[in-house]
Image (cartoon, rainbow, N blue to C red; front, side, top):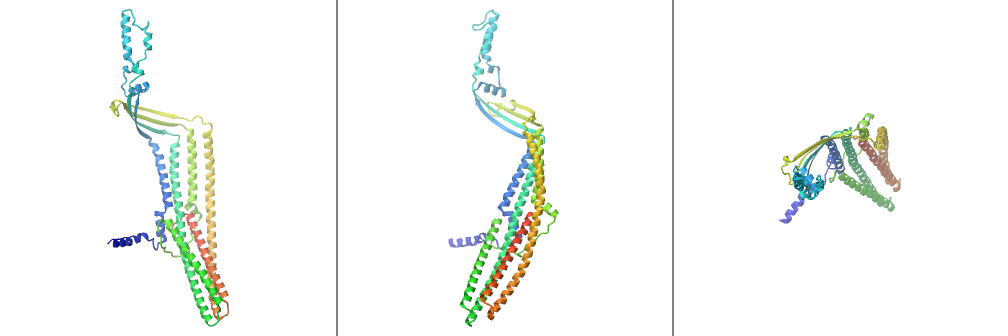
Length: 471
């Protein structure tokens, strides 16, 4: 019974352990947006910038704090202050118990034209009495519950510009996220077309191996008739081993492409459905470059942020005004008779920076220079991206010409190889001549596939540069 359960469990888990099969490019791009870790990290970064914006906007509403403080002290100043804050101070706290007795005696002695012992005329010695109740009070507990509300009324424009900057930084983080996404899409599409090219390469290598096998059979038959030598067979066998080695390497490259695709999608991919080996190059206009380029959008946004930073520096030369209010209660017991012993304080504060040693002026000029620099960077970005687009288009055009040429050369090389194969049968050409023509066919094939691979890379780089879609 246990063995049956184990077998059923293994069978049930097989679909989970297997990778995705016949994955299409569109499916892969959807999985990319969902699973790619770098895109997720960029999304988290954008979310954090969004919360920075919320935090900046929250300053408009001020800040309300609640504090609860518990203290015990026998310090004379503290104990007297505690009683005052609790609205419990009495004349006895001033030491009047030690003051009224002698004062009464003085007044009684004055009626009898006599002063009590120890008091001089005019009661001057009475003023030197140090009341024990005031100087040596009993230790007291003190509990304070307080609400404090602060509100910025005018910040010279600092808060307004800070809110604008955090909002723009959030927009910048979204552009960064788009750039990461465009780069990952480029890598996924490149991997798909790499797989297609490797499959094409494997297909052609198998054709060549089949041709070599047929050539080997021809040599065997010709050797029986005495028209071929053992060295011919050895040369063909060496060529077969070389072709099989190239086929094994191509299969390893295909497996590596699948591993990279699985890494990008954060999902195991076993096979992909590819259609063609050449990507379509997009048509690009100057308007499209400025509208679609993420780098140009980031440069423009950066210029806006520097303008806001300049206004932020100007705000340092303006006054700031704030308001505050406090409401609370204090007693020797927590929250005891709260509303009987409550108190409030309200106020406003104006602050104006009169002198900073020239630091604020220097920072203002620095912000102005930075804005000029960023303005030039925007112009440079526009020209640089346009130049890069033109360069990529030129490279794509060059690879298109190479591919056309290599296709014609490959067709010719295959025809020539077949011709020399027939000549070898007739004894007109040597086996070396046949193998040279076959090596030429393989050389042209490699050049063709390399040109296709390079062209695809440039096409996808152009699409990534302009943040273009799937098609």
